[in-house]
Length: 82
Image (cartoon, rainbow, N blue to C red; front, top):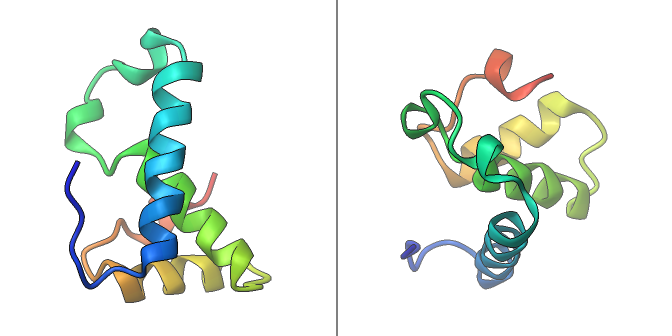
């Protein structure tokens, strides 16, 4: 996947590392579940969550807001929380 050059390099590294781990560790049944092509990728959600952790965001809301600062069309908060 190609990433926008405006993203922080550390975030791009984090995301590409997560994608590699996801491809090698997550079962194909999960990777290819129904409607997976319609949603934001699991890797992006995981990377955004960890990006929030790295920035000491204490709440899910704060992590979501940080993700929206990187990706204005990021999924809505209710889809970000478990």
